[in-house]
Image (cartoon, rainbow, N blue to C red; front, side):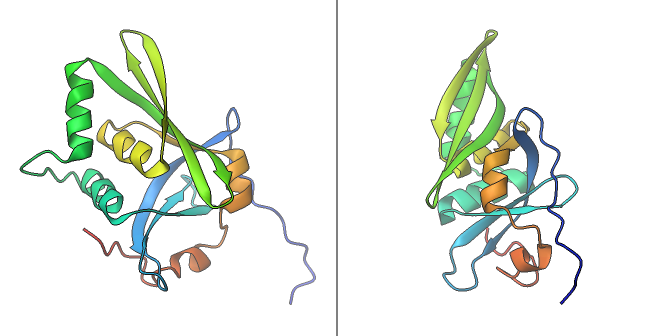
Length: 164
C-alpha cells in the first residue's frame, strides 16, 4: 500500500463533454452480455456500457466497414437520412440514471439542427455510419468511468472483440 495520495484523472472536457471512441466490444465474463467500451483519445478512462447483441453487431459492422447484402435497421435509417439530405453531427451520452444511460443524436438538414432522444448504442451505431464524433457528458464520466485499463478489460481478459 502506497502513502502517495490517489490523484484523480482529469479528462479534457469542452463544454462539459469529452470526445470518446469505441475502443472495443467484448462480452461480460459473468453474464456473457455484450459490453461496449468507450475511451478518450489518451485512454485515461474507460466507460463500459452493456448493450444488446443486435446493437453490438451493428456497431461492430460500422467499425469494421462491413456492408450487409440487405440493409439492416441502422443502414435503412442511414439511407433515409441520405434521401432527406440529413446528416448526423454527433452522438452524446448525456446522463446516467441508476443503471440506465441516456443519449442524444444531433442531426442537421438544410442548416437546421434536429436533436433526438436515443439509446447510447443506437446513437453510436448511427454516429459511426456518418463518421460523426461521439461525446460523453463529464458528469457521466465522473460517476461511471473506470480509470484502470486492466480492470475494465478484465470483462474479457484479452481485450478482443469477440462478437460479430
